[in-house]
Length: 205
Length: 237
Image 1 (cartoon, helix red, strand yellow):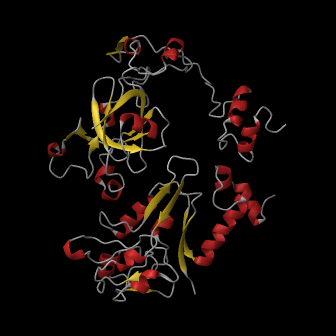
Image 2 (cartoon, rainbow over the protein chains, first blue to last red):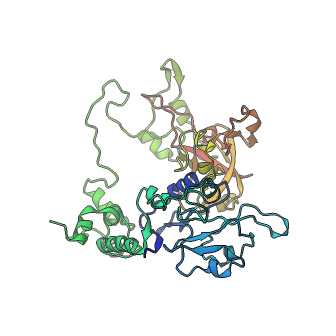
């Protein structure tokens, strides 16, 4: 059984916000709702790193545990989805989430926040696959079309990887081997060198 | 020998690095000493005898804090007719503005926007990512001017114009350098001009145009505007 995951390779992320824009475009996310965002630390200094963050589709998701109306659920592929028809906008999931993934459209008196919205791994929601309701409430269902999330597919440096956890970790492990270092190595030779990649695969002449 | 000519401290930092990634500056220094410039070894392959400089040479900008370089690398004489337009060079450079305007001002692009920005600032997915015109200011200069990150600042140019933008206090820029993105328009010297746009034509995001405070200056051949070097000073807004 597949277990879908995102991974952002911080040695490759160039903070271009392509993933954020692609997500907004594909899912028609309104202004102010950030299903995905790029966070930069040590901006302009040695050791600067950027990381693209969205819902991490946790294996043991705290948002599912705290939701008082059981609106959040996990699919057989490990994707964390939610039902906007049940959501009461209490915001518990927002406080439980370590990544700030759940987003709320409004802030009004008496703490009403509107229906929660978050990254769906481009897997739609509980509505009928491909229906207008699904598109309107949750955005695209690319998984049903056999595609991966648009953010990862659009990533220009292939920093953001999405897919089955074992494939994602294989790709990342191979990168680490040919860089000769875990996160923290830098320089174009290390991030993109073809010869080292071939060496890692045992293809170098 | 590897690392010949580097100091002990430099060798420590340069180990495993190359001329692109050595932060000690040692590898670059030794490379330059041997006649190899790490930042580019391009050579002019053509002599264009119809250009003012048949082979490109450095000419100090019109507004410069390096008065010592003006004598060594002066700009052109003023021209009566540059594509039929009178164009100033030397008469601007002669005056020293660096006492009143001590900071170097440069402009450049943001990844979200393109050109003057009118189209990309009208795209909600892009406009949401850059909602304010800003100036990147080093913490040292921000401190001297009494600015905090996110506060408003007047950036004033030597030609008398000024723009009101948000201060981004960051180490992205070196001390003494101020950076402005040039994709914004729709504000003029602190005044919001949104009401002047035809109905429905105003972009989501408006801001001061960097051009307002940027230098006079034109390329001697193409008449392309100078968009990279000028001087400025900062005032709390």
